Image 1 (cartoon, rainbow, N blue to C red):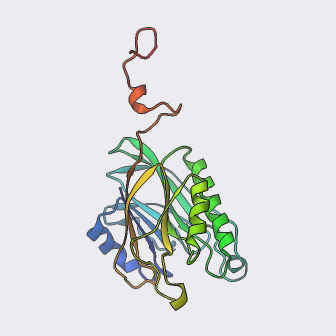
Image 2 (tube, rainbow, N blue to C red):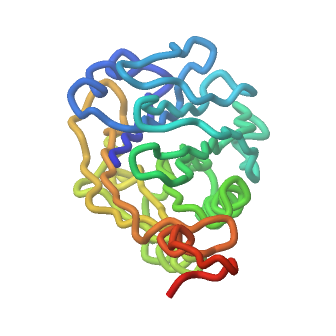
Image 3 (tube, rainbow, N blue to C red):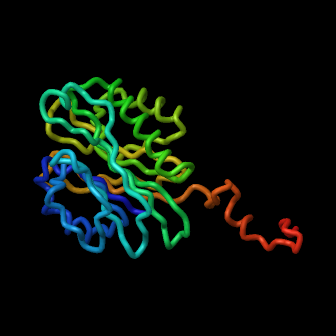
Amino acid sequence: MKVISYNLRKNRASGELIALSENYDPDVLCLQECDTFGLPEEIGRMHLADSTVRNRLGLAIYYRKDRFTNEKTQTFALKKSLHDRVLTPAHERLIGTRLTDIVAHRELVVASFHAAPLTALNSLRRNQIRTAHEELHQLGPGLPTLMVGDYNYPVFKGRLGDHITQSGYDLTLSDTRTYTRYKFFRGHFDLATSIGLTIDSVETLPLGTSDHLPILVTSTYSDEPVNATGVPASLAETERSPGGEFAI
């Protein structure tokens, strides 16, 4: 599965999305700082799952309809920073969608995330990340989950990694830095956190008109799917005896 995440820098890079879709053929596209009032329903072969609605520059998710069906999409408000309260309120910093992979015959959750800006403390961003993971678990309990986006976390990523690992998730950085605007804050801002997935690579794509570089996350499922009772699908499909027990 290929997922692209891109912060459009106040929608300035929106004109690059069709080319990204054509050049890299992603399965899912996760956007931050996009004009949610003017989003097209289709970008290449991808269809709009949904977007945030309470702020113009928000989040959106697109997916390939020939690979997935959209079971449910939900937006979430996370703990606000001073920037959110005083300057430009960003009520919804997370959007997640539960998809059925009709190729692999299983479900997963993919989310687009935008953490509080650099004026906030890292402790607030860790709170937002932890809460985001908890909300996504409620959206798809026990499902493989990938959350990508702008984490706005320039330094002390070792501590961030420890916190994320404690929650059961994995943190994966891209192969090169993804943010270029400020001299002292250049680095890996656009990240991937995941559970139930093996991240094969996180590739930084070429710089466009945004101050963020898009990232391409390639992943595979870590284990076989389970049904609602937690029984592996392969076992659940095993032929049963007339008495209703699993045949041995």
